[in-house]
Length: 222
Image (cartoon, rainbow, N blue to C red; front, side, top):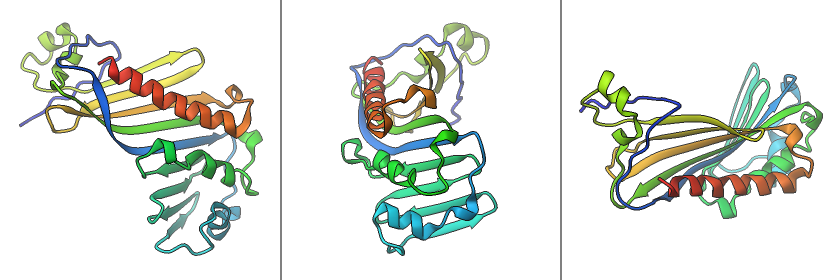
């Protein structure tokens, strides 16, 4: 069955059933953007592992390094650490935001010599979840009638990508079918200018949890 996926910034929302709730957290992420390239010759995997408290050679760890990139994967901890040219990405695949060490891991890595907080220009929070709605989700209802009439009058399914700002914070919200009638894959990216944080790592953790609660509140209105 062919599924038409339409993305738009302004949609007319139409739903059936009760509220949408979080079933599962697939991935949590923090991304740090720098204004200058990282010194990859100073990114030593053993130092990263040591500062994370997993030992210099953790069991099952894989290391991939090339020009301008280093990828450290810890399967036992369900975590990934990716060092790109001007970004650091930390992924937590454990599925529990209350027990997540994501911000703590970031704080530890930020103390290593290659990390210069003065060069940080933005922080990105990413939340990937599976959500469901008891009465089912009317995905075609996401799309305005004018689009359905003029482009796809037999629309069977659809996805939504919303880009918006609240104060100085940028949001990117995506809702796509999960292949099951009452489920959706939801991803939220929240981008903070570094200047928004003056309270250090504690404020970062507070904002990270706050934005997850905000995501839950968003989908509960669907």
